[in-house]
Length: 128
Image (cartoon, rainbow, N blue to C red):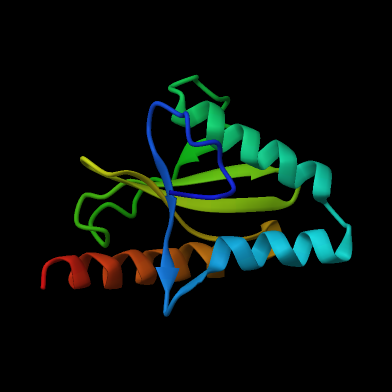
């Protein structure tokens, strides 16, 4: 379970760890260390929490990234956003939502491609 999202959500939220490291945790630490965008970070966490409690969010805050289903073998990729901050999440049946990576608007295309590769590697590992 994610230590950064409240645990009482209807859909459980997890962070994906690679080699024992959560990229989302590193992202949070970086924002908190610089002191920039901390209010947007708080909004972002609230958006993830609300969407995981099945509260509809405007597409300007939480949206499905369309056109990637084939690459992701039917898995849906979502983007939560506040200000210039972005978090990429996918939903795994019987598990919940998994935070893959995070970034800023300027790096959106690169971050989405990175999220797709990470999800593909995760799914490959799960099938072993």
